[in-house]
Length: 377
Ligand SMILES: Cc1ncc(COP(=O)(O)O)c(C=O)c1O
Image: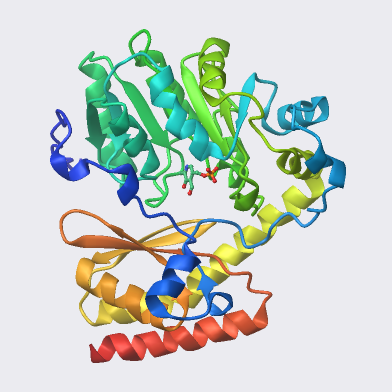
């Protein structure tokens, strides 16, 4: 049997992992891209997020939804329960709001975090002054070995899993998560960020094995393609939800978000068709970009790739990654670049709707130009 290389169990945080909240770069910031590259806002193709390009279409809202204060409606609560499962929940202004509020509401313990992942988690815990420990999150096996060693050490900590991980695509089964939650010490919480789980509903711990010491974040914006509505959810034990509710305050979800989400959650037909279409889009989008990364490989650059339905992540050396980001941006295509240690970076590319022929033709043209430019550089 092949021997696995020994992975040391990390001790405490190293300086390189410290994320300052004001240094976090998020995707979708076309305004900044416009200021940097000068291209008018409406000319950009934004592939810098993992948001579905197939938004829920029925977004009209009645005026009284805006003229009334947005107390949570019964019909909203029942639509949420029908979609996610019959659990107690907190609705938030995007899952980001819950992520920022959580560390103040939990018992003070170190937090075990993925070394690469949605950075607002690390920032929130850092603001709280928590000690943090990082596990490698680019490969499931390496992550599993480190997490299991940490659990076996008997130390007390909260554990965060982003499932599937953005941007590494690393994914754990609900059975693994249940096993870990059972082995955490009393008072410790397994936090599962399922912002991208709508694409694989059977893989959610809400579908199977949700435990009292788990907290699950869900995001409405990704799969339903409406991040501007700002809607997210937290599922956890009632006492923890009460602490978070107190920190977030009244009118947690605006009226427009409730109104549109009620229809979107009830529209099973749209959900099923959209999942099917996103499967096709993922395959077609991956094919489209393949020639660019194959060309980089032929030039001697090592490129590894990971995919999930709403984005693909290509890991390469930092210099060609920066160059590629720049070449694409000069052609008005915005992707995400995520810097890793040491000297490597991820180029994360979101999806376009391949039924939009003009956009596809433009991307294909830009990919060909980028191949030529990268060959000359
Ligand atoms: C893994 C993950 N969690 C949470 C969020 C926050 O999403 P939102 O606040 O729009 O629900 C994001 C946004 O990109 C994300 O990638």
